[in-house]
Amino acid sequence: MKKQKVNRKYNFPDADLYQMAMDAIRLAKRDLEHFKAGYEYDSHRLKGFHDRCQRFVGMPDDDELLGDQMVVTDKKYEAAEKLQHAIRSVMTRVRMAFSNRTGRYRKFGTAKMGDMTDAQLLFCGRRVIRVARAQWDFLADTGLNETHLERLAQACKAFELSMNIQQDKVADRDISVESRIDLGNLIYDELIKVCDIGKDIWAETDRAKYDAYCIYDSNMEQKRIAKGS
Image 1 (spheres, rainbow, N blue to C red):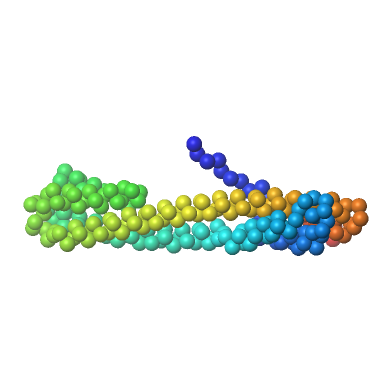
Image 2: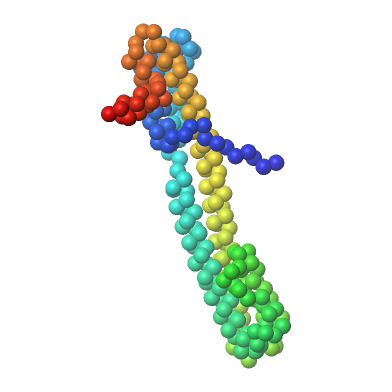
């Protein structure tokens, strides 16, 4: 069964989540005696919250992961061009023996090579080697030799490796993004708990300290002030 997609519980940037969490941790440290006495929220749990935040900020974001993916994709394109060149080098010699309208030529299956998918291009390169060796006697006078086919075989190998590396990077990116969302959601949940406790502590005794724990209310108030100015 396919795993269900993980969604973020918050709709603001990860950098803002981290900063809000660190602010809440700072406030909770100040008020730790109240947290411990009334809510069983001790320094050990607060340290765990802090440690998760540090792991979170140390994780690569999607821009970094996308950049890595783009690097290996460019290398795959380079390997594809080298493979296409190696195929064309063989086919130039094949055309010296066979018209491109003959069955012997079409067996190589290189038509519309530029439109092929990665898998089709790799398959094509290996087919060219196989078909060329099967018709070796007919190609003897074209200058085609084992060196050309070996060069093509190496180009196929390099291209396949570049394909695998790119696919691994795509998978790594998906896994990392999901892990970042999971951790971000845990941090967000803990942030809400800390802020709820903090507001409950100061609700009736200190308005300023109460407001410091208000994530959304304070933001909305700032928006209202900005809109009225």
